[in-house]
Image (cartoon, rainbow, N blue to C red; front, side):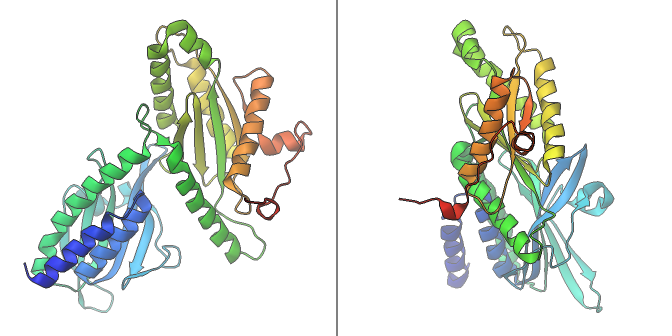
Amino acid sequence: MESKQLEMLIASIVEVTKQRERFALEDCFSRIISRLTEAATLTIYHLQRKDDETFVVPVLHLANGVNVSARSANIKPFPLSSNKRIADILRKPYVASAPDAVGETKKEMILPLQGAKGDVSAFCRIENTSNDANNQRLLPLLLEFYTNFLSLIEDNERDALTGLLNRKTFDGRISKILTTLQTQHQRTADNSSDINFCLATLDIDHFKHVNDTFGHIYGDEVLLLFANLIKKTFRDDDLLFRFGGEEFVVLLANTDTAHAHLALERFRAAVESNPFPQVGQITVSIGVAVVSPNEMPRITIDRADQALYFAKQHGRNQVCVYEELVKQGLLKEQDIKTGDIELF
């Protein structure tokens, strides 16, 4: 290996190890691969499950090393089943040449990206003109390094008991969502958006009684089964957190309060009907609020918590939506904007 290549490899490793969350790691990794392959375009796709179908969703796109939104590049999600070629080649690294629109030869490379559990959860699609064999040989090493470092990041982001995202990770994820919403609102004159998020706080009813009566071993078993129901019920693009104890948070992507209520009611019913060994029946109370780009995350959580407390005070085992409670006059609306809060 030439000294220049070695220097680039070490610099890349240093750059990668500075990252502390998956999206930043993907952005860093894509720029390294783009430089290494002299890529004309590079796109990172995530594989997401929705209604028993796997969708291929673009999350990052570089054109000549410059970050360009997938939307502006007209790169859209599609069902994996609609592209057998990609479905087949995701099983192994793939390099192929294909003619482009102007008749030139353009090399395409698809690099499967393994998650922490070893499953292919994403892939990198590259179109380039580089034929440097030495650089190409570095790719498998960088991919393996990426996978190993991603495992470390995901271990740090996850709750040790349930495997859900932890409280520490929430701030970074909600900040990214708010940035997305703010960007979308700035593009629309009427401040409308086709991207919406709802935040739900979930609390297991009478969980202290479970611990006091059956002990913490059975309490942990309840938390594990509850977390598994969360994973089975919600979509891959919904973010699932355990905040601690029996408190959980779900960030529902691309949905309004009506659809969020339906999804959460489906989950509530699943918990109610699920047998919990030794303990018997468990129920859950849930509060929901809309995520606004103009307000701090703490305000959204407070609103969801108000709806949750209302559910607790009015019989438990139900889903309550903050905005609906305000509309019905059952709760007084919080009118707290970011600019009204003094930070010390």
